[in-house]
Image (tube, rainbow, N blue to C red):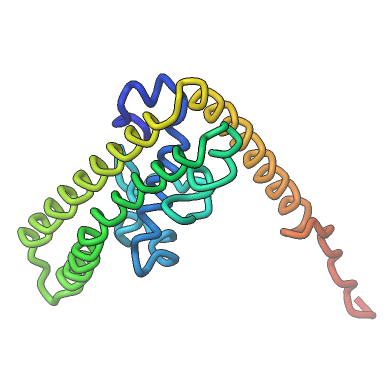
Length: 205
């Protein structure tokens, strides 16, 4: 997922944070954001640098990005008000740049659906449209990766290191919650209820 991130981001261990921001800004700028978040590759869902249909990150979109870069965690690493404002501005600028591309992407999605549901499928037209969509996704990925790099460079080396540690702890907490949910579901349902016994057979049997 992160293979297209620049080496500085990889070395600093904040790729997860920056990709969360990319997802938050990407989805936030779309009128169909709730539906898009659940869409797969054919649904023209959120794209992450490195390929389509990347996994979602645990972050609630906020002003200029998700909570990771727009609120508590930035404060936890000691980011100043000026730094927070600059980072919000970076992702807001990226959001504006990508808004027109997202509108075009929705139109292409509708065109693809029409092509694939036609009485006769025009393979050449489908391929041409696919190439256009891929080119757009590449441009979006490039723009968001630049925003990630710019945001990372606003923080000091110490702040980036601390942010990486906080994200590791956050990931561990989320994995523990998911494991707990799976364990409860395995015991009889989302609420952890024990499986119900089978009803007794009718009398006389």
